[in-house]
Image (tube, rainbow, N blue to C red):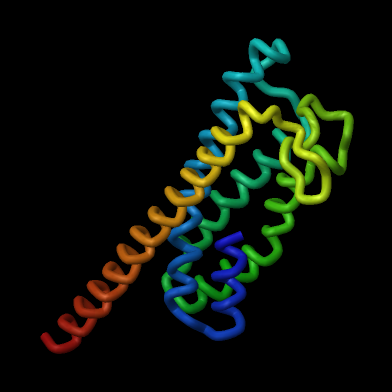
Length: 174
């Protein structure tokens, strides 16, 4: 969602920090999605008797992981930062469908191995009270961790861009 908003800001306002924030968020998304896939496989093996099943949620998360990899690869493949921001923003706008699909995959296709949504805005929660508080605390912790890492990586991207500009200016003056 954060990459979608940052990409929209880039497309509409051409604000460089938004493009750098989207770029900074993608590797974090890769790591978090990979952790979800690996821990899901570890949990799923004893529960389902297999490390991988082509379950709708698993498959949509794999597609989301591949999207993140493609996004980062596209940024790295293009030398001009504005062109890279343009193309990756369009990719992000199109690819945001995968994030929505991953979120609602269980609701769209009921034949999956996963249970239905545990938390819902329009229905009664499907989580026992003893588990809801730890669940909310963990969710808040991961969201705060993600935000902190995005801020840190965005600052790093800004400094790297400044260093690159200073080095280019220095080469021109020499």
